[in-house]
Length: 160
Image (cartoon, rainbow, N blue to C red; front, top):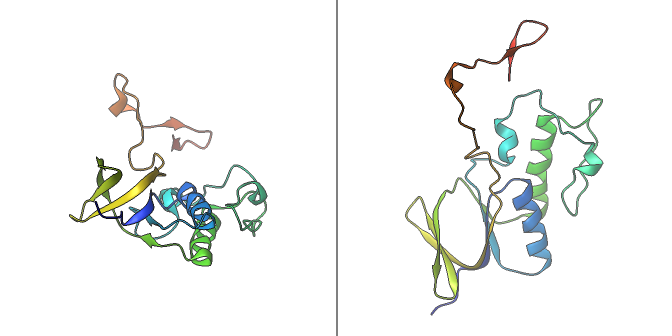
């Protein structure tokens, strides 16, 4: 059997995937990050503009490089987080392939085979799933769910 394409394939290029990539690099392993998004920033690119981190930048840094404090008062904004994640990728020059969707991960002897949506396949000794929940969120089923339009706030606007 031939050697695998990589020691490790990381599926997902958001915060978790980037943190794993940092430590894989430090360990001297050959790896690639496969991300379904077209650009850096993970799920943060899909959130509403007013979203902020729930903690100060100092507690939200990825390994090896502190997140700069917010330019505004309070916790970092959505755009600041996307900018930080983008610059983090560039800083470390990780091998990230995007957009790239994985259809299956299967055992292939002593290695794992990843079948990609574009008909290619890759092999690896190990696979890390760092996809988060953005692509397939859990939405509980309850009666008349489709009728719910949100709760009116004090200003009379619907919110979720």
